[in-house]
Amino acid sequence: MSTILPSDDMPSRLSSLPPGWVSPVPVPVRPRGHKTLFLRWSSDFAFHSHSTHYSSSSSPTLDCELHRLAERGLTCCIWKPSNTTIDPTKMSSPTDLPPVDSPLALRHISFTFENGDADRSALELVHALNPDWKTDPGPVVFKRFTDGITNTLTKAVKQRPGLSKAEIDDEAVLIRAYGKGTDVLIDRERELRAHNLLATLGLAPPLLARFDNGLMYRFIQGDVCSAEDLHRPEVYRAVAKRLGQWHGALPISTLTNTPILDQELKQKHCAPKDGKLTRPAPNLWTVMQQWIDALPNTTEKERERNAKLSEECTWLSSRLGSTPGLDGRDYIFGHCDLLCGNVIVQHPSGTETNGDGKERPVSFIDYEYTTPVPAAFDIANHFAEWAGMDCNHAAVPTHSQRLDFLKSYVGSFRYHSINDSDNLAIEIDFHNDMTTMLQQVDAFRGVPGFYWGVWALIQATISQIDFDYASYAEIRLGEYWAWKEEMDGSREKAGRAQHIREKRWAEK
Image (cartoon, rainbow, N blue to C red):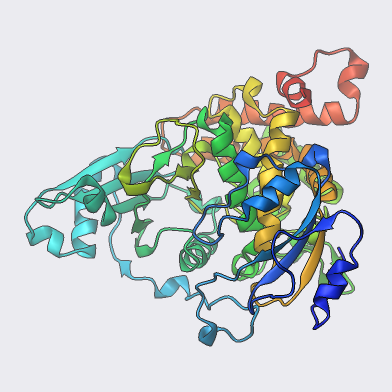
């Protein structure tokens, strides 16, 4: 990436740009607080006109002329208006985000949610949170969501007389009770810090309170995606844009302000050099190693299994742990759990989308697994979720679908990764960005199977939720082994048939 510093002779400097550079807006006038991106496209990687509107709370729709030019395979210069809502008086420097309060400052309700008596537990909690719900007219109604396989989630609404459904939902409360024993899998402080930051930036519902074994927060109106929805272009492009915003704009510092890892984990997975860590702690590899260390090891078979998994984790860390993403960012703020149920398609005025083909913004929910990870892992992990909980491997995205997704992702990442206070014009090689991310996501495609396979092995020993975690672990780890034997050529050498997931991934 090269940088062109602005100056009084910017118009003349722009006129001297290489042939093919154009500007859809007048160059002599640059409003203060705006930024310029020089985007380089080639015709085979151009945006499609129907997929280029960045409609979200923090990104205005880009100039349609830009998209027309992009479709012709031209390079172009655009102004990016500054539209941040962050209060600059609360920032210690132009690049800082507002300070995020400690999770300990969140209101705590001393109460334990009991799954065996869920409605009574939920009623106790909402009455403690909103005492007026106990005295005002209208019943409190609960809806239990059953899609989760880690936690239980309950929606509580106060059906006040005379209010519409949308108005009632505006004050609805979500109650999320943690699954038994899940603290071995999830750093609850890191989760709260992540949620706090996201809520501060308008990317998550406001936190209302915590209780002994869970959280309460506002309800997001919209449609929860199904696995089939993730295949729809208008949905996956919106997911790509939101994920690009996360990766481009969110600081990982919020996720690293957690208890210090032991020295062995640091040596293994944080790549220390000259006494300094070259990777954030925690990260994808330390999390997986901690999960492996938490597995039962009472039998010889279990110890052999754990040793093998630990060996594989170390191998993955050494092979992929220093993957340079866009702008050389090895690690970004990853969601790490973008299954269909954690993607909410927003719609105006409480109307239904009904699969009308129109692209609408999406929101991500559930931040338990947010961790500094390579961007390619977060994307590959989402692609794995196209298969759904039934692990329909024929449903993972083909090469052309991944390419279409990444067009929207790269554009959004570039838009959001430039700080609003930067007085810079930046040259971006879009073709190179696309090629980089395609290759890196391909390299990471087997890692989600390992990640969730280890996770499921732990859940099989601790969870009280009715789900066959042992079989799920076998399937997900099978994805990993299928990828590895494809990578090292052992599958072809042995004459075995190609795994259906690998075959689908190779489809154009």
